[in-house]
Image (cartoon, rainbow over all chains, first blue to last red; front, side):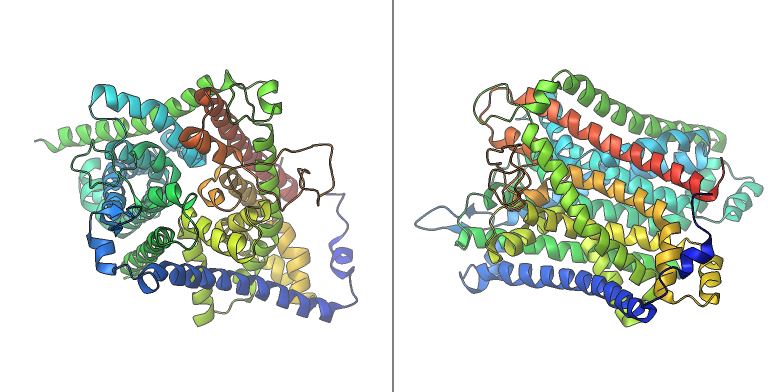
Length: 306
Length: 295
């Protein structure tokens, strides 16, 4: 501490231009806030206009785009722009991975808060933090070299499948779900637990009948946030899902999602062509979905306050 | 079923879940490190990558990753801390603050590929720069900003009220109080948060595919002129980062030693992120000790 100069000197040092500094500081931070707003607005506007171009300028039918299963933009005679397989793929991997990750994540959270609050948390917390730290391409790469051959040899199919995508995504969203679920469980008032135990309920009865219902809105928020992450994840899924343009009929079929088609084709389609514009429309769907997830989370948290 | 038995079964299930989660992590890490560290050598880290032949290294990719991270932080930190100060000290509860908060929320929840597409539109096509480091760094700034804003807002709010009020009571103006009292005491938490965010940026690939590109020009590390196209310091050159490299060799690479290169790169990537995390904890606790004078 002795290295610091006394507080009085420190505070009074730059005495001149206080007024200037005051206004300058004000302008500075307001500028930062304005930049954030304008970034959000410009993303929405730019992607919005660009994403609508395929419908307005190129005359692709919106109905065909979201309901047709035929995706064949390179066919010279009769190009088809049905993105339903990709939209379906996106929703399928999102829901499936949420179904896998939700019980694991919430179970992990309950383990940390209810079963073994002291040592369990000390072990599981860093584990979760390390899982967050693994970059998504690394997940994809391990999926590609371990999971895909494993499924090909032991389960069936090509290995590149909806199933591989689901497994990779569930591991990726597991930390998100667990972290928020843990916060939800540990922020519950202590007397809920004690009241229930005092009535003679077992730990499982307390968890099932008291704690989970009380934390439900936040637990759902945790799952929705996980789903939002799964919906937007691109590279990891792209490496394991197979990227075919047909609607998958089983878990072992190769499939594609909006993000994987964008990643694959954005690089080698001409900027401004119809095919390229339809990719931007898919990007717009991703943007709209991320707004939808936010609204859903807002709705859930407004229920929590009541 | 007896409720005691049900309780025991449930406890067993929860312990199993915890074991599953831990074994996933242990499995992932041991796979990455055991397979990857075999291929990591000084040679691997210092030879340039090859597009067709085996035996390429990751020198340029590694440099690009750190360089883009540096530029991103250079832009994102002042902006994010400024935003955090605004949210913590200047924003009055009301419509505008709500809008800004929603904006942060939207930015934070945007998929990184969407940010990459925005970057492609804005920093690649509209500006006419093509694939550049600066474009990549700006896209990553968008991706990173909400995290830093949130971290700095929380850090500034966590500074004890007494400190701020004592300073204001001494007649110090608000901005000066922020500069000399609030920011220094919020600094450790901001730094920790920023390093954690840096780990995220370091591993990010989707936002960089269309902004910083999939290639690196031949670099001459003796050339320090930031305007020369061969210089590694030039921010207007395309740059493939390590994370993007793993993706591109796996999906469109022609080299025969894809596995070796990606195993090695994955190990380097994960180790770097690990180092970022440990560094964040270490610096956080060290500064905490120094500031609070508790030993």
